[in-house]
Image (cartoon, rainbow, N blue to C red):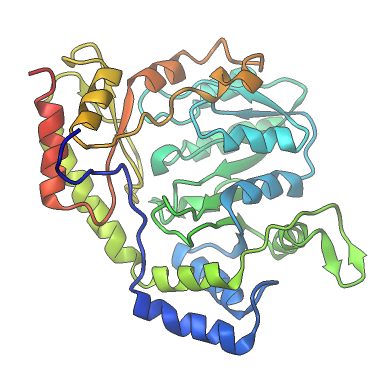
Length: 369
């Protein structure tokens, strides 16, 4: 192992401690720790304003938010989703008593292929669960058309897509609901956290009730809910983070541009396409084909030996994990399987120095020598 300091695939962004302390002092003075406290309400409004969406419901993490989003739509049957994602995407389907059906991805942007979605629809299909993979927007217009023609609900797993915009504005406006992760590894974090974006006040009220055990008020339940509330400490972190998010996104863009320039023309390396008007550069995936001098796993190991920790994300496919091996669609995901065998996500975060970027590039361009 190299003696130089390691370069991790990501490092969480943190606000200046002195900016967080006043929020914490307020928590101690008020004695309100959770249950939709003042900081929680302030952060919901601030995020709705920043993201350009009508309603935000904060959660303790993105997985519980995704579980609740599916629950809020009262679905029954099959949900078409991607095998090229983190396992929480499919887990949320199963935990709701629904059946996941896997469809293939587009070779260029690695998002669910609209043609593959359409081919997977049956009489049992009730919803589509696409992922804005690496923050790259799905073909939301095509997905909306499919959903309209087949009377299906659409929930976007937008875990990677904080602040991403297309020509019409925030991509979180698409679908019946969209779900964010605010986990420590994301471009905007509250240590742990998540959010659901709703498009009507009535849906926000339903989501908020399900987040709080299903209580409609102190004496009545609107349904069977869980405990998904974000506490005041996490909301304080989010408010402190929000003051610095534009700076963090700008630095991520600089890192991504350095990578693009340094890898341009390198044989055997392809970058997935993305159609965002505003990208958040949450990840920097590269795809390695047979023209690269090393296999993906060989490069991954060589980088590790040099103290550079890239990630094979997403490998393996969800449908290759034991609980999902017999799911419908697992035999028709050739593009997803190819991407899983070729992908390597490079280190990217605001604190990554120019010298560290050069180390990463030198390791890749010098591979096999």
